[in-house]
Image (cartoon, rainbow, N blue to C red):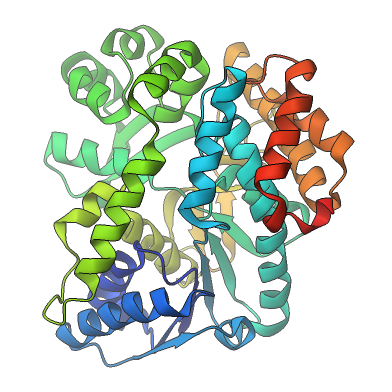
Length: 421
């Protein structure tokens, strides 16, 4: 088995490598290829990755390359975890909206829109190359944000792909810790979109523990999700952390203006991580990596790879991003949802679920409309469609604001948006 990691110079990569080092032999991973366009940074991260693998006595080979086609050729799995424009672009995504009285965030609102414009064409190009060069039964696993939009674009282009986020596995691990059970015994019922989802049920060995979780452990769940305990208790479901941006946008904007956004903090963490990675004696991921975010990233990736590599009917239930099909009858079949799926070598099949509430459905459909327009704008470079997309975003107040906001986004991202001329 060959695994290609596109965006291999990410500071997250050592966590993934450590996961492969511990479980790759059982999977039959023989070749790991890290690809990136930043060769200096790739050599730093790749050097550390090599030490991790040697320390674990891993028998496979590790390759570093700038050649995308070489990385993709014959790969059984292609993991995409890139950030077009780097953290400087993220800083712009999180601060430009402030000039228009809107919160700044890298996956939701105008910041997520800007990131999608830069990212969708790049990921679609990677997917097209992978379809030609990768293993005939290969899978593309997308970690690249905004996962919901990128996964929708991949699905719309009939790519053999699944989208993945660490939020569900984070909640699963928290529940396992609360009840003192192995995480494999915990399953989640998720509905909605990535970063706009609700966990409607939590089961251990097939038996619901949702009522006990909310009645006896709501404070711990509130700490995990950022939601007030009273809101979780009232709703009877667990909203994902990112739902806060839609519920409390004014408060979050005020906090950002007073305290700054996450991007600057992440820049400092990344500088520290890259310095640590150059230490020839470092052979395990440093504690600082936990501050970068993305907890359980490697576990989520390995679980999906294991499931997709398993025999049909021998997989497992995992929360991933795939087209809805007929799983949720009140949503369009081609809408990419973040739901529990049965994952095996045949792919990820969404498990049937009850319809959403009216409030949930309204947000999901509004975001779906915005996402489809954003994909169209990213691919075409049509400014009118781009304005329509921004104006359709629930966090953008009006078209009058969308027009100058788009101009500011396009100006700041000019070098990364060739489609817009």
